Image 1 (tube, rainbow, N blue to C red):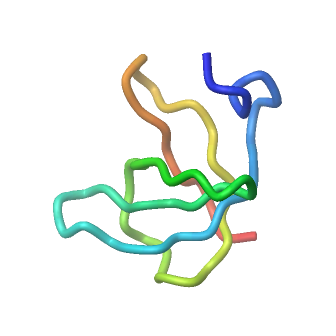
Image 2: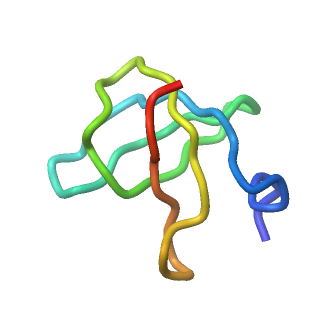
Amino acid sequence: MPWFLKRGRVVATITANNGNGTSQAELRDGSVITVKGESVSVGEKVFIRKGGDQRGYAEFGAV
């Protein structure tokens, strides 16, 4: 289980919108994950939480 799931949500910075309903998000430790959603612009900070299914994570609002 990734460390950030233990905290429930974590702040990340959107680094790219992929054009397929997902975005790239950089965590504070520098790792990059793919998240569901493209509603937040590149460079904006978001909360990331575990997604509805077991395979993904979802952005849920700008910080």
